[in-house]
Image 1: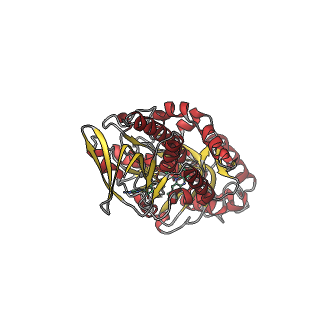
Image 2: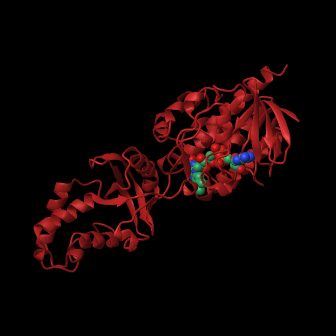
Image 3: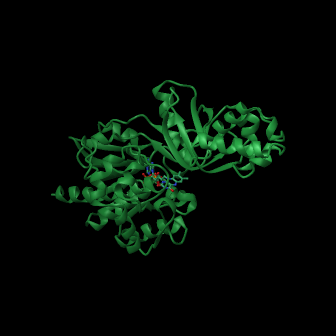
Length: 424
Ligand SMILES: Cc1cc2nc3c(=O)[nH]c(=O)nc-3n(C[C@H](O)[C@H](O)[C@H](O)COP(=O)(O)OP(=O)(O)OC[C@H]3O[C@@H](n4cnc5c(N)ncnc54)[C@H](O)[C@@H]3O)c2cc1C
């Protein structure tokens, strides 16, 4: 069978690419190995699908630390605001939540998937599910066909690789696209887990001293070997049985991975500032004067409300202070150390959960070999890439889906134009 455009992968990038190609009058086939399309999209954003983000473009780019700047030209053609209008035109109203995050008003990711599928039907896009692609055929520097595992073959002037990364493989993304890209002459940059919980072998983690405790609105930093912050994120975090997780941790995670690689480390230091709005010296003055004033009171009572109770008791104990001791009996130096650990509680981490357990795959098809305005391969005529298979990764908060939809839009539009132009 011959098509104008074959899209491999039915995640957000592939669905958008197929729709864009269909809207540009191409005869399109979308192939996915799974029994359903949009499986990862349907579980994204805690099942509510954080479909995009409403921050200004410059902010969005900043929130895509993995090659966000590559997307400047793409955003000038199809932006986050265009994503919002696109979904509104499909009957999906979106609402804005904290940090610019956009969700469907239904709070159901499936409604987003269903809207995309309805649009595909309207455009009469052929869909083949349960159809794992085995390989791509190239000849004389151009794409020829897609070969399925079952032996079927589909020819096309343009082929779009939209198979995602390697994370959460039960949704279908198992890293199959990298080999096809390599075969076309592309470079695959180092793959690594990002937006992933961080592990630690510290005794307090092993002993589960803080397991389940959430800290709200703290500043979490990853330190370089000289003790200077590489990155700081102010958000929530949680202690788990293996280490730490939560939004601040996910955002810091890639810096842990990169620091370990860069300096060949087995451990990296992280630091929690539990009171980011207060400076250390005034905080010390305030705490030491209340401890003195209430000299007969147990220190844990004097400091009640300063921090979540479990964390307060933990930091007192860590600094050798009996929480029941009367304030007046505690050495000044211990109070100073306690205040320091409120501002910078430092601990070692030794890695992250695996790439498979990460929300997002870092690394992928090098963006240096992709045309930023079209998503066309610079190595192979008729080959296009979009979504997480590319070396682009953002923070959670709608940035990855935004990147998938924007690159998908460009890949679909341009693959259709290329294919139709080269028909005769
Ligand atoms: C639990 C979870 C929550 C997330 N939440 C958010 C969020 O809130 N906001 C955000 O921005 N990002 C989020 N992400 C990340 C986001 O979902 C992904 O970045 C995005 O889905 C990538 O889209 P994609 O189209 O590139 O690939 P995918 O969504 O991974 O889709 C790839 C598709 O290709 C198909 N495929 C793979 N190999 C083959 C093959 N050989 N043959 C045929 N088909 C194949 C797969 O079956 C799959 O359907 C989350 C990720 C996870 C795991």
